[in-house]
Length: 94
Image 1 (cartoon, one colour):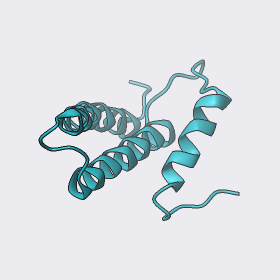
Image 2 (image 1 turned 180 degrees about the vertical axis):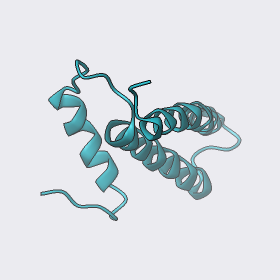
Image 3 (image 1 turned 180 degrees about the horizontal axis):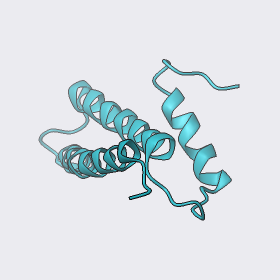
């Protein structure tokens, strides 16, 4: 086996985490569409957390995930991930 086991594990973890995070995001979106709940500060906090987590997982997949030698990540994908990870204020890019 020529693949790096750490990269394969990293890819699997990202894949396993993204589905429940997207489900939480969809649930929050449905709740904000409800007239009885509306857009509360609590739901906004959850939505921001989901967005930040999704961006980090996308970043981790690029940084640590398994890829073959002929797999190339496009410039646009990298550029779209970096600002999203910096929105939380913990990271800055120059």
